[in-house]
Image: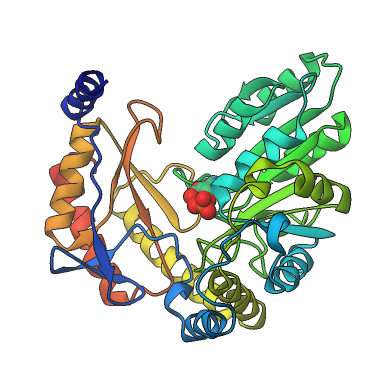
Length: 389
Ligand SMILES: Cc1ncc(COP(=O)(O)O)c(C=O)c1O
């Protein structure tokens, strides 16, 4: 076996697609230490920079004192600590849904939803750039799978119309695509839903806390808060904590509690994560200035990068894809930027399609103007050297 694995690893290396882990230590919400050198973190999903907010840290500390470090068993087997109930109710209320269920992380939530809710005679229509967790969940489902072109409602409609399945139809999409930063046409998908009667499963992992007046996501931005059949998002990105939630009506949640294997057969989250998520939710409900500050940074950086000639594709929010193309060239650009004290990763296949390797820059609320000016100058300088602008 070792020989086979080594052979594959060698080919991955030759292609410039090899990954190593970088061990870092955060020194603030936006700065990290790596190999004893300070870097500006340009790849965090903590869009509101809340993971270092004192209210959230203190909530986690208090929960450890009260509940201990771990839960050490699954929720269904050994009781569900009471923090779960309040957080599930609050997050459902915030997003406009009837009921919520917390999963240990977004990957497990997504794996649980599609594989559990769909059956053999059903058909799943999935955006071609959906996240790996959604893809893996579909692989576990016995339903038929149809891939529609990225954000293309005409293609979706054509496929839905043509499909004569005996079972139910499901449309699955991210609301903000994690590697492209563009937004799904939720309003149009919803119109089709009303016309054709399919069910929508939406992943708002990267939209929660960022889009919509109150930070409730792209659903809110589209005037459709609480209107999808199944809504999923995480606490581990803009909310600065860890874990994920699924929102739906009572029957769907009851079914997931009874059937979703990634819910049933895993140790529950520690109280510290739940308490931190609750504190984060309270913060964003009480104070919209976090979002305002984030969007100030987003506009500032995006405008300047576009002015400098970068093609930011259709991205709209904090996720900025700088598509380089070849794996090795993307790695080379990453290395130059790392030397300049900027920490970010070359995103390569299979995370993104072949030939579209990129640097995925994320803009967060905690950046100062100096941070942003420094990063942009480095990007522009490097972009010119690499022939991107
Ligand atoms: C769109 C999307 N869905 C789900 C997940 C999984 O969430 P988690 O990191 O909590 O497992 C991620 C990323 O990590 C994501 O980008």
